[in-house]
Image 1 (cartoon, rainbow, N blue to C red):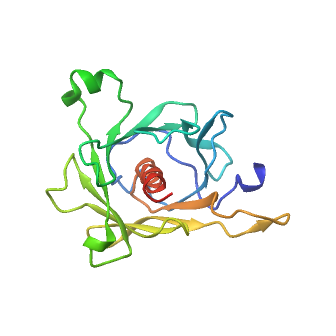
Image 2 (tube, helix red, strand yellow):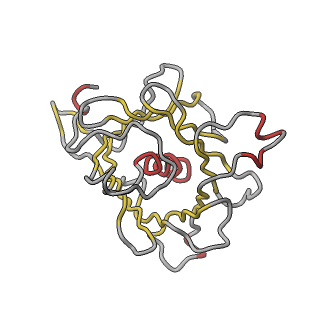
Length: 216
C-alpha cells in the first residue's frame, strides 16, 4: 500500500466541523487526498483515505455482501465524523441524509427528531433533467424544497467528477490517479480527491461515498 500513500498537498484537519464552508484562515490551501476503495479490515468492504504524510485520515467499513442502509465516515482512529442514512421513504429515488457524528439505533425507534440531518443528497435522474452531466444535488436540511447548495456533475465510473456550489465554483473534485508504478496501474480503485480551500474535506469524502452507492 505504501506506493500510493503520498500525494501533493497538506494533511486533513483533525478537528471535526459540521459546516461545509470553512473560514479561509482555517483552511487556506487546496488539499489533495488519495482514496483507496478498500477497507483495511479483512472482513469488510470500504474506503481508506490517505493524506500527503501517508497517514490514514478517513476510513469506512461495511460488511461484505451488504447493500448498506447506513454508512459511517470515521477518522483515522475510528471516531465517527458523519453518518449517511438512506431515505427509505423515497424508494424510486436514491436519496440520503447526512448527519453529524454517529446515529444510534435509538434514533430510529424513539426520538429521531433530536438528530436533524445537516444535508440531503438526491440522485439526479437524467431522463428528467436537461443536463445529463449532473449526478446529484445536495440540499441543506432534510428536503429538496429549497434550491440546492451543491451540485455534483461528471462521471463517477470514470472517476471524473466536480462538486460545484451555487455560484458554479468548484469546491471539490474527483480525479483518476493515472500514474503507473512498477508496472501496476491504479485503475479506478485508487483515485484522488481534491478539496478546495474553505470546503470541508469530511463532507467531500461523504459525497464520494454516496456517489459510490448511487453509481457503482
